[in-house]
Image (cartoon, rainbow, N blue to C red; front, top):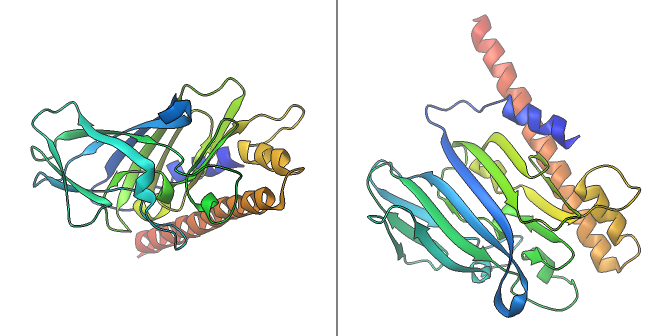
Length: 252
């Protein structure tokens, strides 16, 4: 299902005079106190004026301070570029040559401990057995208007041997799509163990893994599933509307 969905997304580029490209590389690592963490690289083009605002994860479903999950945020590559604070804790400013290629690196780590519970499960979940993220609690990105077109690419590395990756953009260790920043921020990501004898997506395996555990885990799995379903319905509706408008214009 998700592979078909990814094909629909890739084949339906939103109309725009310019498409920015975001490339994410997400590697499983060890952070403070040997806890599981994710080392993230994101590559993109700076703005034509050389001043590019950057947003860190900040809030999701009313829960804030998600930027505390991000550490070691830094620039790599272009030594002429600089990274500085702004008036908001979750917004940074990159100053560089106009339209320069920028690479940011950071570490994403779960900033709470103990059993999975509300409201902590609205923050990034990065554990020994699985990682469950949504873009709004995990991704650092340059700012864009909601309707701006984006080409995105996700590459996952250093996964545990039995982990499978399922995202709103497809299955496997690499996903590519054309989308918007609005849809990107509504997307979800799961890296979980494959369950022997169970086919389907990594999300399906997550549900099986949760089935005999606490009601909190089950409620989170159900919420995670709703994110996937709403994302697919919403984007498919926009794809259909976009196609109808294009056909209408061509028929005039």
